[in-house]
Image 1: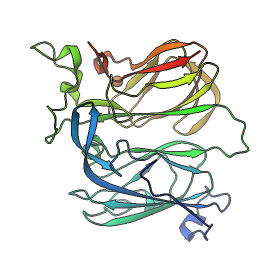
Image 2 (image 1 turned 60 degrees about the vertical axis):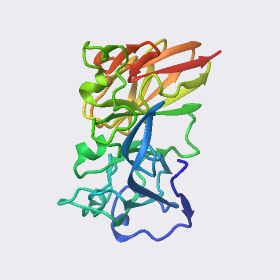
Image 3 (image 1 turned 45 degrees about the horizontal axis):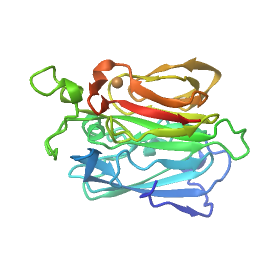
Length: 311
Ligand SMILES: [Cu+2]
């Protein structure tokens, strides 16, 4: 969250619209953020620069973290060449804050700004994205996580958190540095087209394999994975050597958590899964739709990364 302007200010009276919702059990702090949507250059792998549409020049957008009961106030500054909005996926916002032009909130014109305000919902994993020309705007990179943290008094169920934001960067004019392709061993020299040539470039946390930063944990840690699929395909994410205990789906805690080593992330879905890091070593974490990964000489491409458990 390095680029988000965050200001914690004293509790303010809630607007009538906010007070009317059931999701604000107590007056919390007002958490202010500014998200500036604009085209910017983004490096998806070393030397592979693309012109993406970003919030605050980062892809994914800043991870917004608040606590239940806070008032979330986000000003969208639109520096894109067209209108946009922000929809707060999974959040029971007041109707006029839902970011769907023609239905709820107005489109935010090029050069304009709009302030969204709503009570933070129950603790969990949510995300935000435009709801205007959605496939194109999300496909250019406009999305980010909204995390509502558990109260400090809650039992500590994990030692460390990691976020996996899966994205499908559409192929588009304006790619720099040799185009979008990162297909590794499949695409060059007249063979089968690479995954990226077929479907744009698949990203985790804004990078594509083998250049997605490793997750490093220590043996014995319990690691919460917050996973979201911002794209349009299903990505069955598979962890080698260990498994997730799925504790929440779409921000809703599960009464009976269950174990998975292959967790299908449907379009728009979120999962919270806790890994007991009890198996030292370097382990692959990848999409098991194997058309979404390739075996390149420098390591697996596409939706593939490493989880390293240090002894
Ligand atoms: Cu996949």
